Length: 346
Ligand code: UDP
Image 1 (cartoon, rainbow, N blue to C red):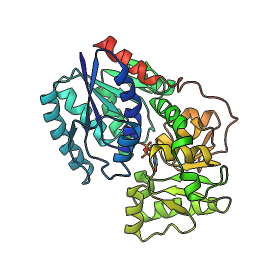
Image 2: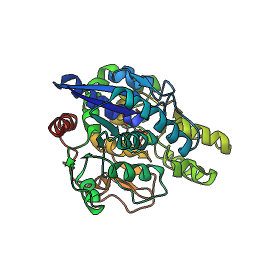
Image 3: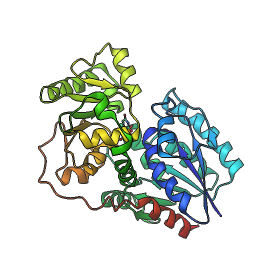
Image 4: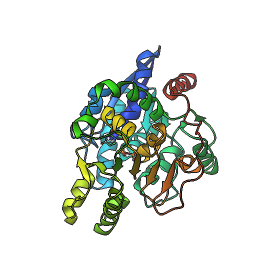
């Protein structure tokens, strides 16, 4: 039996891990032990995903959140090392680019437990982003690197990483297909909010670069207000953004703010909106999965193929390129490919 310790802690990781956990449930000879670091902890940012997406309850919950990056990551490292010593897994599986990712990867690497990284090779080439530091370091200690795109494979090659690199497609596409199948019958959010399909824009903001100063947040809110002149802008409010606005004394007038929503409601909002305005990595791609045009509220993106294929543009960049289909996100079976490769490497 191959024992895999999965480390999650933040919202996008619950969604990606949900797709892989479903594949674990069907995989013979493999068992998954889930660890929640606690990075995202409130019910709307964590519990709803475990409940709705049927993610196994974490066997270990570290309850680490808040504090500076060093403090948070340090406490996670300490907690994860103890869990790894107790569980003695064959592999540690980490997702994406958060402090939970780097803490899991580093704790495992020091214990000589091989690390598998889902969403390896993404780069913004902006080292001021905390996520970029987490990605680069995680990739450099990983034994298996599961890339969602060909650009990610090329980024790793440029850094000298070629062994253990596999282009498997995007597990978030797997997750989207499942959510779309269910959202039609299980989500009532459009009716509850009185939204007409095609009659609103969907926005999300949470990146540090947009929430770290009053000037940056004011600029992005002003931009969204300008867009709201065309059609209502629905903004599920990330706790970091709500707290930043309170701290800076900024309001959300002119925008339709709602509490963060679960993944099925998010799928319904993505399916029903006319366009997407976001600084989220995941939401940029989901806009494409739902075939909605996206404006990215950042000065660069890791998901370069969405821009090249005309579905995404940077808010201060050129207009959309001519549209075409993107094939490299796979066929919705990235999770199965990942487990097959872990099994082959074990
Ligand atoms: N999401 C959600 N509810 C919300 C906002 C986002 O379920 O209210 C989902 C979204 O569909 C995507 C993921 O959360 O799958 C993105 O997470 P986030 O934007 O926090 O992180 P990033 O992708 O930028 O790392």
